[in-house]
Image 1 (cartoon, rainbow, N blue to C red):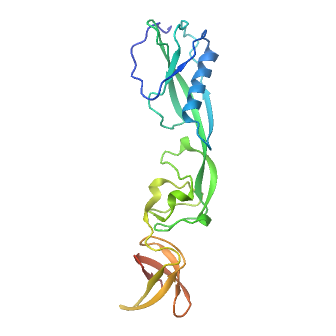
Image 2 (cartoon, rainbow, N blue to C red):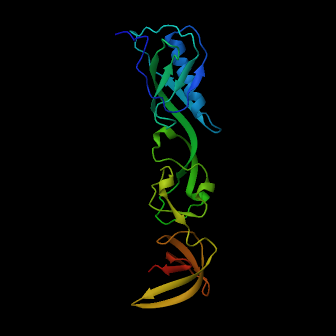
Image 3 (cartoon, rainbow, N blue to C red):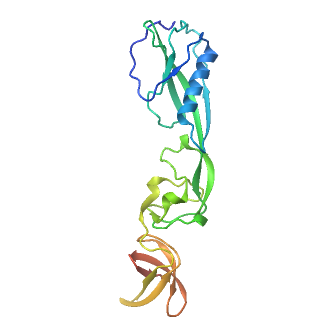
Length: 231
């Protein structure tokens, strides 16, 4: 079935950009759709790959006397599959949907080791890898600046991309803080001054140096400035 010279009006969401008028061909239309998507997702540090699928060979489009426009109906949501609407805005124009496959490669933070809920994140905990962010529906973290003084709200497996949803509040205890070290045994609590050797939120496990004995022990953060020694 041929494509009618007139199409029903389509609601176009997202940015529409004009494309230069020229004699129409399948290769030309696909190239224009690819260039449009490249422009939308290009950003410093990004590597964008765009491919289009072959159009229906039964389509017969009239040449357009006006500059073509292109738009993304769903806005700039990054997904592996998109449709670009290429439109001839002339009075007797047409609208064509061009299927696109999108890859956007960016630098993201990946966990070097299993991270525990409540942990603070330091440089040794993560590494930078280039990943296709169109396959990261929960987002990603691009730099350590984005996690400064933040703790994890849930565990993160080694090799997993760090996401905004994995971040909790600010760290209750930071490395170098003077803390109250509590040792509990048979209902009796003994308190001593200590120095935190790690950072974390309530529930995080970290190492603490006893200020009196110099002994380093494992402890759990109970609250601001308070840690409980583990047996």
